[in-house]
Length: 126
Length: 126
DNA sequence: CGGTATCCATAAGGATACTG
DNA sequence: CAGTATCCTTATGGATACCG
Image (tube, rainbow over all chains, first blue to last red; front, side):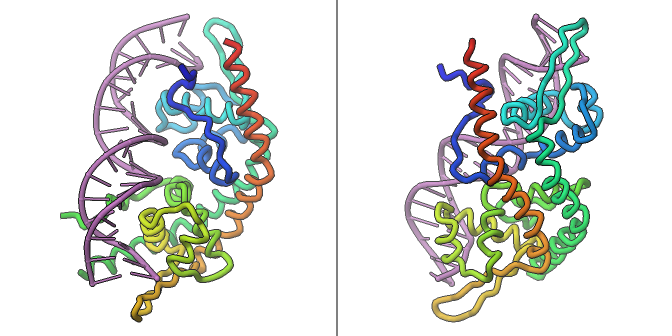
C-alpha cells in the first residue's frame, strides 16, 4: 500500500534539469501553461483552448502541475461545481524561459524540417 | 518496406513547440547538447561526460540530433575509427534558450521539491 | 461540470552481446 | 573505437464508460 495513485512516482532527481524536463517535457504541460498565461481558466475552458487534448490527459497533467507547484486548483462547491486553474508565482516565473523556447521553436522549426528532409534524402541514396 | 530504422518516425508536427519538445524533451538530448556546448567531442568522450548514459541511448539520441540538424557527425576513417560530434549553427542557436531553461531549473528546483513535499503531506492527511 | 476507472497500444529507455 | 542487434521492462498517451 504505497498511496501513489495513477502510477505517479516521487523519485528524487539529482539533476534539476532532468527533473524539470520530466515535468514539462511531455506532450501537454507547455500547452497548458501557455493557455493559463493570460489568466485563470476552468477545466472545460482549457479543453477548448487546447482542443485536441482528452479529459484524461488534461486531468493527469493538471494534477502533476499542481503537485509541482506550477498551478493552483480552486474548487467552488457550487452546483454544478466550478473549478479554476491559475498559475502560481512559480508557474509565472517559468513563463519567461518557456516563451524563449517557444519563440526559438517558431523561428527554427523550418530549419529542423529542412534538416530532416535532407537527412532522409541522404539515407535514400541507398 | 518503409526504411525507418529503430522505429523512428517522421511525422509532420503542425505545432512547432511540440515538434521541438519531441526532440529535446527526452532524458538525454539536453545533456548531450550541454556537453557539446564547449566544443567538439568524440563518442566515448560524450559517454564519460554524461556518465550514466548507455551506448545504446547515446547512439540513438545522437542520431536524432544529427537528423534534426542540431549536430554534425564526422567520421575519420582511421584505425581505430574516430568520430567527432559538433554543434551546428542551429544547435548553437538553441544554446541560449536552453541555458535559460537550465538556469531556471537550477534556481527553482528547490521550490518544486518543496511543492511536492507539501502536496504529499496534504494527501497523507487521509 | 469536472472529473476517475479501466483497459489498451505504442513509445521510451535499458542490459547485454556482438561487430567492422 | 564506435557503434548495432536483440530482447525486455516501464512509461506515456489515449478511448471509453462511468461517477459525484
